[in-house]
Length: 574
Image 1 (cartoon, rainbow, N blue to C red):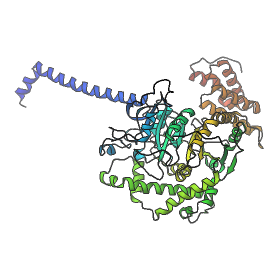
Image 2 (cartoon, rainbow, N blue to C red):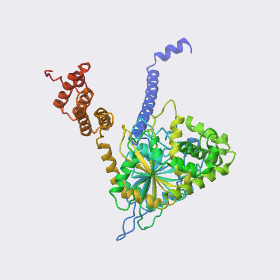
Image 3 (cartoon, rainbow, N blue to C red):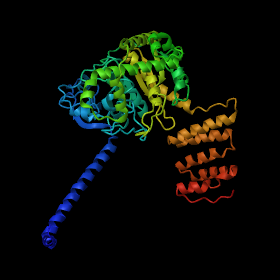
Image 4 (spheres, rainbow, N blue to C red):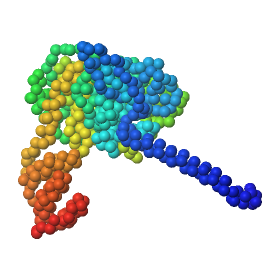
């Protein structure tokens, strides 16, 4: 541009107006884009990131009076993005899958069954990509936020469905369960999760991951809703009531880092308060499987003892993983190799293992399934229910830079492999929180005994919850180490209650600890903190004064407490 032209343009007010309009236009576009991003983030927070897409499919019409309302009338549900819906593309949790597939020509059997019984479908939910994981994380659609512990994973692969229920966005939600994909997120989110017996509910219109392991699962906050959905999907008919016998897998509770009290204690108390229940029995399920599933010997390490229950369970989970990989490769290997989809790091690693692996003897994998189902049939018979932890660890943190640790993954699969490999039905039953995390136990019944299992949970849940509550509140008796150990246990109970914002319960526990050991300044400090939460300022001041008298190192306790609560320091002698 010549100097004369540059001067001419600079002196032309119309040019500057046009430039100003252009800059303003760019600013407006940028501003609108920012607003859209903010709105998207806000919406993500509002629905906890559970949904991939929100839509509404209305139920079939209600029958005219005097006919009774449909059993699911008025209930809303969401579906994992793995179920086919006519006119929509099923995304399988991955944009490349959605890009390379057509709209559905029909609606999955499960969805149609629910619509026919009066429920309204309100959207599709996030899952681990290709339903190939147990964390619930998804790099494309973002990981759903666990309402119970927002900084930790929700569990997967049916993460969005579990979160939608836990966040009270829907009454129930549908998922699938392959290697724990319903049971694990139900446990991490503190809700009910039911894994149907393999083949008990039609998988027509559901994208497969591993046909020998895949089955339908569903979530609910309320046991009656879980039961009603089960009646619809399983097409259950009334049957005579039979006696029930709990079989507690003590060895699996020993593995748990989550459930501290002995499960056999509150299970026994539950049976004592209900009619039709036999006294619970105990079993080392690992050793039982080792003795009754001989095909697992091939998969045990040569240096290990097959009679070791833990080694047998590890072998069982290895067989499950091999079977999962083999069938996943058969189903999707060609698509993976041709499309080369963009996958998250953890899923990519598992997919690569599946594509590269080829079991030496596939038949032995299927043989182990048959043997395990027969073994559980012999153990449980028609009246038995196996009691075990759903998972042995607390959920890991979201978006961890370290990724999913091999130990966490392996320990999770050890427990989930029992019903996955046997095809048995299993229900995750939420209990109280521990260390700020939801806890649960699981019940497993025979393959095909879905109604028996659902009826059992409906029958015993309120009593079970009450017994767990009483067990957690019961004061531990002094052991061989005397009152000091008992007082420390009470302090820990108080700490758990405090973390759960149960201030009165925390005060009670700290008070009992003080009765046993009145010279521990920490107990007074902790009780003061709980008292402050209830605005009991004078009592808190008294406890602080007592703590200072016992331990001069905490002489600034009152000053600190007054700072965090914005209260003046109360002057008091001593």
